[in-house]
Image (cartoon, rainbow, N blue to C red):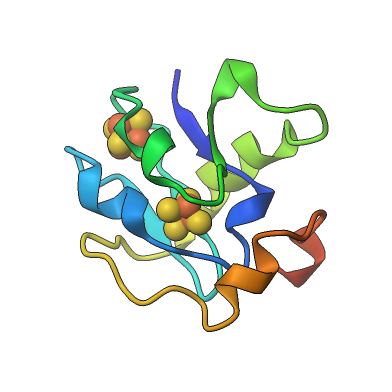
Length: 107
Ligand code: SF4
Ligand code: F3S
């Protein structure tokens, strides 16, 4: 079991989740962050930290977000670890209200 970062992180990337993860299992792309499923210990600490409400347990993913489980695993292999928070995307507070952002993901 793992937690999964979903659509609403894209172009928000607040990174508050990173600060609370006890095992540093976040990996960072340009405009999205993912969780390495092999490292997540399911503590759930990151869920409440995310102002975008983007993190869910893999067995409780919202309808239509199921594909993000595979995407997190895949991108975690390609992207470097992030262990400190950083400034959010410049337009995060606008993007946070948008849906279906997967088309904007930069790989
Ligand atoms: Fe890290 Fe816990 Fe979130 Fe998993 S559930 S990504 S271990 S903070
Ligand atoms: Fe993304 Fe939320 Fe973390 S927007 S970077 S999952 S705090």
